[in-house]
Amino acid sequence: MASGPINGSPILVTSNRGAILELLCHQDRLSRSEIAERTGISLPTVHRLCTQLEGEGLIIVTEEKRDGRGRPSQLLSFNASSHAVIAMNIRDQGFDGIVMGLNGTVLEERSEPFPEGTCGPDQLVKALTDFAQKLHSFADTRNIPIHGIGVSVPGIIRLDGTIEYSSQLEWTNIPLTPILDSVFHKPLLAENNANAFTYGEWIRGAGQGQEPLIGCIQEQNGVGAGAVCNGDILRGARGGAGEIGYMLASPDALDRLHTHTGDLEELLVGAETETGQRFIDLLALAIANISVAIDPAKVVLRLNDDSATGIVIDKIKQRLIGRIPGQLDIVKTKLGHKAELLGVGEMISRQVRTNVFAD
Image 1 (tube, helix red, strand yellow):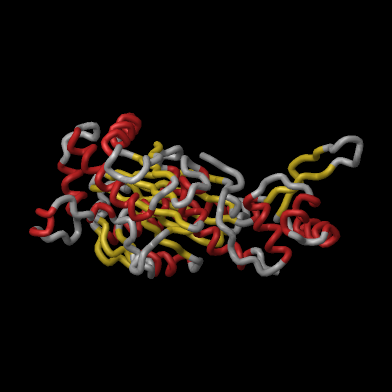
Image 2: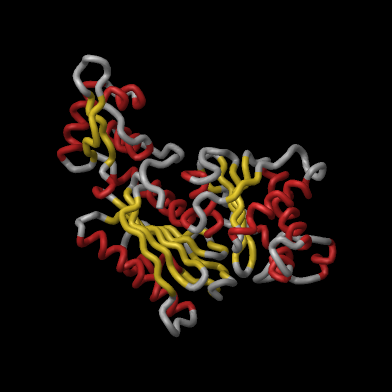
């Protein structure tokens, strides 16, 4: 699992203290003079605040460096164990989860299958809650404060955290964040898995720092996409941006009703193999259509069959030559299924850092 400082967009910083901690969450092992230079805070103030923050256990001295014959400079880092969040991903037939420091360092990683006999949304949400409590207990036994919980879910999620529909989980109108809030009483975030995947790849993966970035994932029951623009997820007015499974693949789609499964999604699921021409053409249509609307710097792709991804990418690139403006930069995922965890973990970290770092 990747660890350490992450690429992220600026958040609201309301104090010198917060500015120093925010910087150290994104840039590891900095000297006090480097901190002063990058934040614009006077060096004496940086010395005073860093001494205070070190005393509180929020930052640590990781090493020293020597510049010529002068006095060695201490290099400072954010102490990941001082403040953390929980990130979880629901996929296939199980849960993945991490305890993550607010600088992106993974402190604990676990995976569990769905409990035997689990059926229905109530039981599955209960199993998810139990899984979250295990991660929380890990942090509690090590005196690591947990400040928020993020969950990546395969489905359409309203802005209030309600799972409007998930074909993979067979969920409809499940108020996930209110349910979790009744147990944990912490800031919560439920995020579409394609959005979380894309954000994770933008933070540390194959699309690190590239904007706009499109992430596209194939799931067992369909396909989804996300987009990062200006350091944040492009969500749309109702939180449904990136639902490319609902793209209409032909005029014939206008003669059919699509409620819980989109036209393109149905056709992709019905395609025989991921490397077959029909699958290639359908996925090429989806990537081309969303790309001409957003004009991405890069497209990151993940398929169910990881071994087929490179072949599929090459075929899609060839298929789109001369069909859309320019040439798309399509690359394979670097993080795989860990992208959702890192993505939703950073999203909930951004949500809580301002308050945690306040005076």
